[in-house]
Image (cartoon, rainbow, N blue to C red):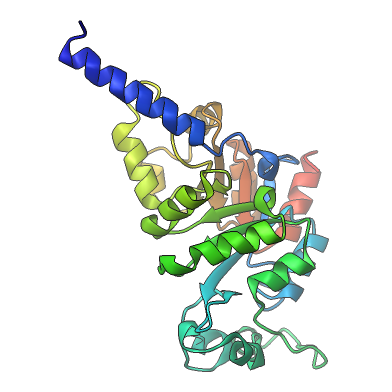
Length: 293
């Protein structure tokens, strides 16, 4: 007969085996090389209005492997690509995205804030920059790998989001991240861990607390870490040994947001799997000079 402690270990083991069977970590197309991957933060967002189709097109032309974008739901429940919940900084219109319809959002100027804050950049008067829906992005870039950050804390739209991903067969092209643990937790449950996700802050805390358990498995596929964070430095999460250890656990390590050439080269030297940047062309040129493109 098993002692109580042995029974506990056995139960933990069976639980971890079950979690392993649900893990998305076998779905690796999203993480295929060339490595490290160039992840364009809101597109080529220092040259064109961020989170617009034009900024994403430019980033891809400059060598980005992945485009990164942010999504919120409109009043009519449409997942829309925009960074801020309030539109004032981006469009000059003091409205919250959840209080207006997609058709209203489409009428606003997605380039207003960008050109106001960058007077040295000349705007092409023939282009009206729109805030796109996520569906428009899927239609425009059907084969593109996309890093989606769910900014909205409302879980009610997750089924619609998953239906949209499935409708356009983007399951293997997507990595989803959210700072809202309840959102990413429910997304994983609804997708049965079959779509890649990145760790939230809560995921990382859980990993640090529970990773001593034999056979412990994480429920995410990648870390996306702030490169300049003192917390990251404190816990050694920017050291080659830490990165190698996580990679041996079949986890990817991405750092944001790197635009400085020296820091980009440092991230490459320590073994980062991905570099999240506002300057995809600069990262591409550096990687090419290092023989990695």
